[in-house]
Image (cartoon, rainbow, N blue to C red; front, side):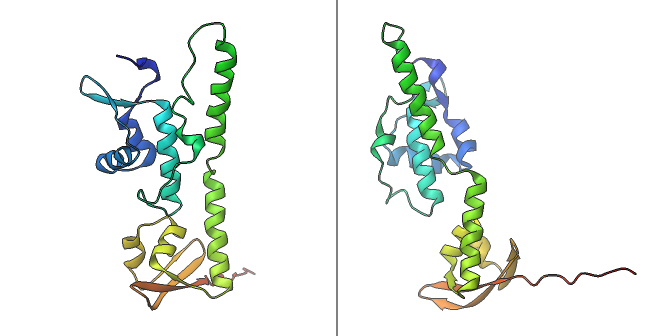
Length: 187
């Protein structure tokens, strides 16, 4: 086996990491032309492969598809996370690898920032009275298009979403702030 088994990551962990089914994961691996390493009946990928998969996952979460994904040069460096061999140059190479590792994870948006960006988009849509197609609304809410389209009207994150017609081939939605409940005072 050419790769050190300590640095390999089980493919089954990637399904949990990206919250996708096995077939979707293998579609992503195929799109990136990655071949998992088989050890017995289990499949593994390298940390460098995970960096590339993370970049693709971020692209898909941002509303992109596998087919329109283009890798940035920083994610293509296949040896970015491997630990250098123990020779005279090892301390410098390990620091470089660690810096690349930190760099790869620092560019991922935090879940809180992602939520704030979504809420900001919804706030702007309500303020400017924009009509959003189902695909954009589902992306902003982090829901599937099917979940969004189930109801003629629903509420989430303090906003009310109402179907108002068609926008091309998609349903369009009006976004409004939910009415604030009246406060009841006890005497």
